[in-house]
Amino acid sequence: MDCAIAAIVEVGLPRASLAEIARRAGITKQAIFYHFASREELIHEVVATVTNRGAEFMAARWRHQPSPVGELAVYIEANVEYIATHRDQVRALVAIAMNFTDEDGRSGLALDASVYGDSLAPLQDILRRGQEQGQFAEFNTRTMAVTIRAAIDAIGPQLRVIPDLDLGSYARDLVALFHRATAGNRT
Image 1 (cartoon, rainbow, N blue to C red):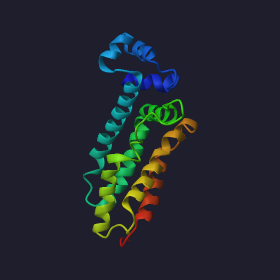
Image 2 (image 1 turned 180 degrees about the vertical axis):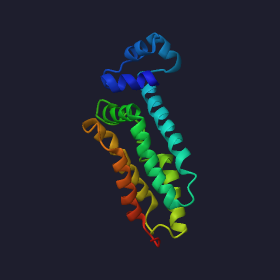
Image 3 (image 1 turned 45 degrees about the horizontal axis):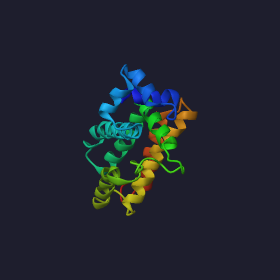
Image 4 (image 1 turned 135 degrees about the horizontal axis):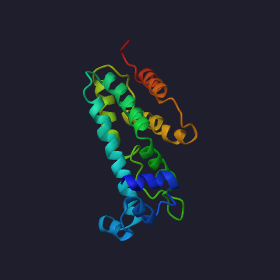
């Protein structure tokens, strides 16, 4: 996975062939076929691996907060911290999202993991519990969760053109923004 990520980041997804990945790993191209039936399957596994590693990194940080307000702040901070400390993985995901398409230009990924599927469930749970406890206003939790994810996911493409983007400030700004956006009866 690490060699595939490095190849995607360094030469771009179109040129990150199985031969290039195998060369970086010090194995033969045929050895890759022992684990993956195709380049497409390998790309899907890169997405799954990076996404799962990110989820584990973040969950370890935000699940021990005493309130949904704290959980949301740490959820955002942990996401941005992951991006800051795993830039190559994020750049690989961005490259895949932008270039892994079929002949008609449609995404080769079944779903965008950050916007669809089960990946929103933990964030929606934080928002729902915050509403139940009167810490958050009433709003559609899916809409708010998608909006929060979109704000976080916008960092990756920015890093391509602003490599020295101040992610500490970015995280503080997002926390403040969504603190105001979710405000209920709290002061």
